[in-house]
Amino acid sequence: MFWKKNKSLLEGLVLKRSHDISLVEQLEKDIKLYVSETNDSTEQALERIYAIMSHKNLSYEETVKTHEGREVMYQLLLHRQWIGFQLELLRAEKAKSLGLKR
Figure (cartoon, rainbow, N blue to C red):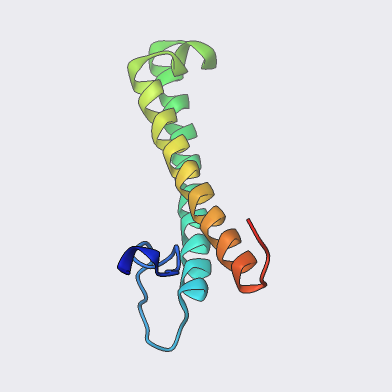
């Protein structure tokens, strides 16, 4: 039956950009890209926080409590959560390929 198939967790979540690469390899490449983009977005987020602090003469703690500050932090945490999700998929697939149980 179709619901009992042992499908990879990556199917449908990882898009292969080349036919000669596995889903796991593509996910590893994607994670590297996500991490570099998150590093860039972290720098941008800090710049935005510091700009708000400077413009409104607020402390860091006061700034992250503002609507703008919360939005910046939310986006940053969302990026990091996505990376964590992708890393967990990779870990599960590699464990499965080694015959390890979850």
